[in-house]
Amino acid sequence: MVETIVPPAAAPVALAELRAFLRIDGVDDDAALAAQLRVASELCERFIGAPLLERTLRETLAARAEWQALSVVPVRAVTAVQAVTADGSTVALAPETHGIDIDAAGRGWVRCAAGVGRIAVTYTAGSAGDWNAVPEPVRHGILRLAAHLRMDGDGAPPAAVTALWRPWRVMRLGAGAVR
Image (cartoon, rainbow, N blue to C red; front, side):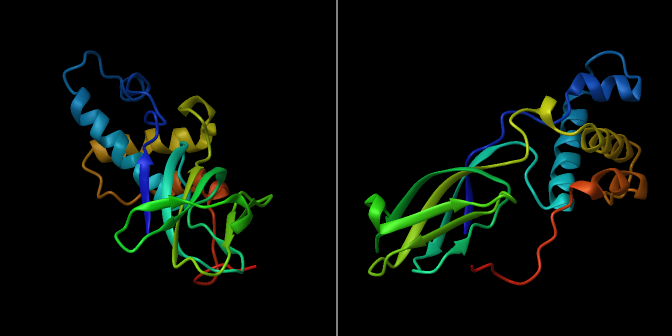
């Protein structure tokens, strides 16, 4: 199970940018435009298979002596590994009882010594620190999809948008990664 502890700081495309793209003056439609940007951003993240902006996540895993992969990539930092007690609370683990690693592809890995049932791993994952660092084709695809949604699009990204996002798509084979 993965839960978001700290959400991303902002949408990857500024509201003013969408207003300019759609040639809208004034702020009367800002609430609807902001909602369309959120939907377009979420659809982008689902399509590429990775969060656009960094966020802090907590993932609960079965403790295993062999390496196991964290669910969300790219991982920027693993900040805590804790044992999960029977009542669901967490207890800090001594550093010598577990191992953490982040490989060159940004996949986070964790292992834990025997005797611990479940662990909670807190980590930061995401492609960019702020929306200005999101690659321009990805941002433009979000703008185009938000505009498409504005014109009563069905929510499926048009081919022109998916073509912009495809180079950043993360593909995974298999159910779970183990080293």
